[in-house]
Image: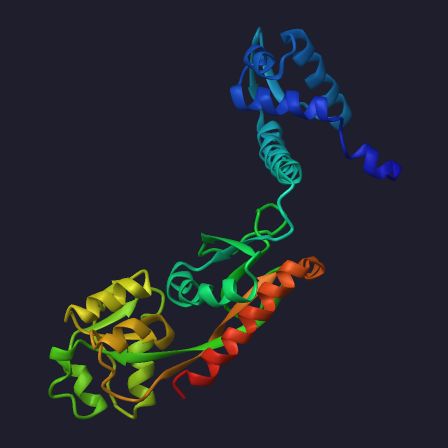
Length: 303
């Protein structure tokens, strides 16, 4: 460690004392948490302020309160200490090299990953994959995941993004609403349902179909595609849903695809992971299996 590194990294005893005092707003309660005396906590914080060259607390008699500099420092120190605690817990847990933690988009996990797991188990019976639903990007350094399913562009910070397949949304309706639909413009007569983040989907689909129609007013929106699909199956209207998410409904006839005109997307599904994960043979097996399954999906997706 360089002299500069040592100068900008205060001793942990100072940081723990400060973080506890900042949380509790009291040196005495901080002392009870850390297991020191109140005077020891006061000395640690005084040493930290001397180290930093800045006051962190306003002191009025025996009362103390964080000042502006203290609040800003406490926010970052607490986050850093939390990351260290999580990293230490993971190291102490000593997980099996055959266990992989995967974060996945909820709908993707339920409708694409889960039905294919028997094939993964058949190929690698000793491989254990734990799934957690996550819809947001996160920092692999501070989260306990080996990889994540990402939808969008291959731009996850600090991660490799392997393309799984691109998305194609298809128009679907309930069997009762399918009657009388002869050409794409007929869908404009139905209530149009949308996924909340893709409210322009129908306008783009009608343009693709060569229909001069732009839906007017706000359209009923659903935050998850499976909720959207259920509403369409119940007869609430027409929906545009990625085809791979509704394979069971299409197979059972609960949803009908009235027109063979998928709406392509520039965005796609990716397996995102830190480059170092490729050093694990277990992760390479999961990755290779997932890419092979994705190639099958891509080969049969709507053209």
